[in-house]
Length: 322
Image (cartoon, rainbow, N blue to C red; front, side, top):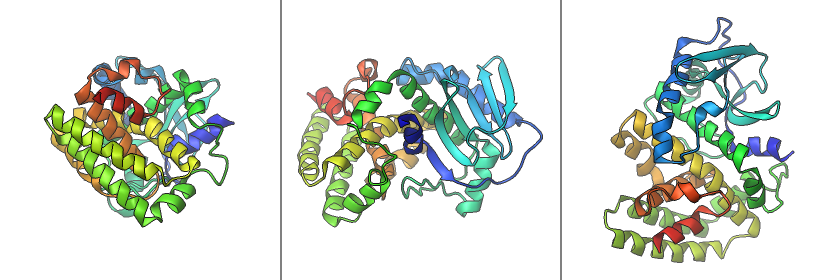
């Protein structure tokens, strides 16, 4: 049961509609995106979590009618068509017949939905993250594969740790989830102000080239964060930790892939510049988790080698800053 609930929490559910129906098979664009992701996975792993290999998991592309399940790797791909496991417009990691798969729309479906929504706006039911990209293209599709693939890796290797970080809570409970964040955090201007201070401080730390300045900034961040958390309920604290720990690390992987595919400047513009802009819903924790991972890259490269998702990112960050 928790796996089905977790799918709702970790998957980026972009809409419940589809755009076009394709009955002509999987396009070369999607196959090339799979191949390109497979070709870069070793370099990405070397920079992040060395055991994460996207090709360990089937990638299922939904074209509006069928799933096309791709396995193999960069050199040879096996493609199987089937009736959709989920259907609809969803990107997620999902358990299918005892193993996890990366399930997402085809790049054409993604691009068509982005156009339908508002020219170039990506919408998540988990928040109001509406930052513009020029469009949704092949590079963005590859980063989505890596993001959702990371969830498949998390759930295949750290299931117990993920369960335990929820402390018995379930996303199947209507009182635990997005609505609680909106009610207790987004609608409270005092909490919002604290959060804005925290993100501004983390952004300053990330952009600093001085180890002394970074540690001083993290000390100030810790002070502000402790004050803010003293105002929150236990359920909200658990949610924040969960989203940072699970989604923040996946967003970190996504940002690394995006930087490799595009450029450092493109990464800075999309992932770093908006950090201190407040967003409602849970997506702000994706950014907070991502920036903490990026800061730890500077403090102690290779921190990922011993990270098992048993501790919060905040705890590990403080350890690395000592």
